[in-house]
Amino acid sequence: MKKVVSLAAMLGLILSSSAVFAVDTCVKCHKSMDKVAEYIKKSGAKSADELVDFLRNKSAKKALHKSVKDEDIKKAFAEVKK
Ligand code: HEC
Image 1 (cartoon, rainbow, N blue to C red):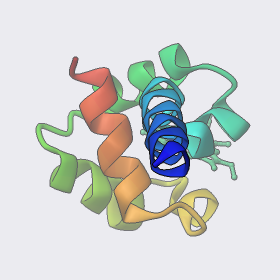
Image 2 (cartoon, rainbow, N blue to C red):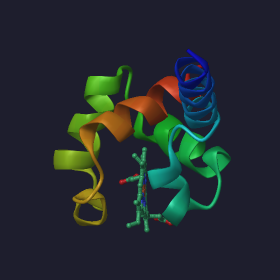
Image 3 (tube, rainbow, N blue to C red):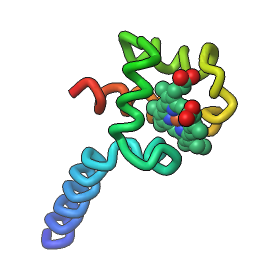
């Protein structure tokens, strides 16, 4: 029983910390979420899917974002729109 509780506590920790650092991937290169937010605003994307499309197909910097997962792009969008 104890094990289950500590496991649940750990899961909670992991989940809550990943909510704060939701877009680690972006921050690795962009240094801060503020920068990412600025770029996302400039891109004019109105939805997470549009942002994915922009970074995958339209951006002049698309090659830089090949290694970035769709999920992370969507997370970044959600984070910025908070
Ligand atoms: C491998 C490094 C790297 C990663 C990882 C990365 N970026 Fe970028 N990104 C760049 C660079 C470099 C630029 C160009 C910056 C500049 O023009 O000064 C850029 C530009 C952008 C732009 C503007 C593109 C344009 O054409 O106007 C957006 C939006 C963006 N990044 C979003 C993201 C998001 C969201 C993530 C995480 C899901 C992410 N990036 C992850 C390196 C990266």
